[in-house]
Amino acid sequence: MRPDSGWTFQPMASMSGTEFDSWCQLLEERAGIVWNAERKSYLEVRLTARMRELGISDYACYFRQVQDGARGALEWSWLLDRLTVQETRFFRHPPSFEFVSAHLQQLLSAGQESLSLWSVGCSTGEEAWSLAMSAAGAVSDSGRAAEFSVLASDISRTALAFARVGSYPRRRSNQLETQLCQRYLLAEDDGSHGVCNSLKPRVCFSRLNILELADMPVIDMDVIFCQNVLIYFRRWKRRNILDQLVRRLVPGGVLILGTGEINGWEHPQLVPVDNDKILAFARKE
Image (cartoon, rainbow, N blue to C red; front, side, top):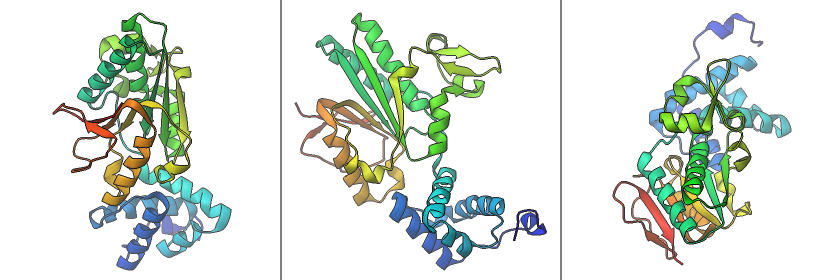
């Protein structure tokens, strides 16, 4: 059935329990994402939208398509973008970024000449650019000619493509304090704001499935920022992910998580940061 048939204007049938279980299993196996029953209707809406674009009339047929060789791999990537892109904003959790700035300033005061930061699950880039602004500010305040770089990773190709451009509509750029906006963003002809040229070379955007961290040769990070990512995984997978992140911290490096994302977690190489406004850990020297 093709998209121009009358079927595209008809409501989609509800997904059966068996079909829902199959999709949940596939999402967890391939991306680690746990999809609970409360979000069943959201999954139906997202799948329906894509199926109508393709002219597919039932969930089972589409399920088979996303597993059909190279064609299925491309379709899976497209679908995953629809399911995982999250809303974010600049300096989303101010206390966490205040802590990052203070930590970077301490490193620079101690004579460190370069800074490496990582935004895990960067979505459309606001978090990564916020880390870059924090690093730039710390370097400027130190009065030293230190270098810094930000690695920004996400599983969504669409989100990464948007993030690389570094251009945001006014409703998003207005989230920034006026001073930061004037310092790091440039007004564009269409009313949006683009990241300034001095910051752009500092951030590298890369596609990464967080379940494949063990194969990623990233090491020696001073700051790993991983907020609003772990909530989509089962508890044991969260711990596995965190163990991999710890291995990529330098001694003295810090791991910043979202408050409430994990409880009771301990690691022999980490000590909790004494700050009741954030959830952060420092790797032992």
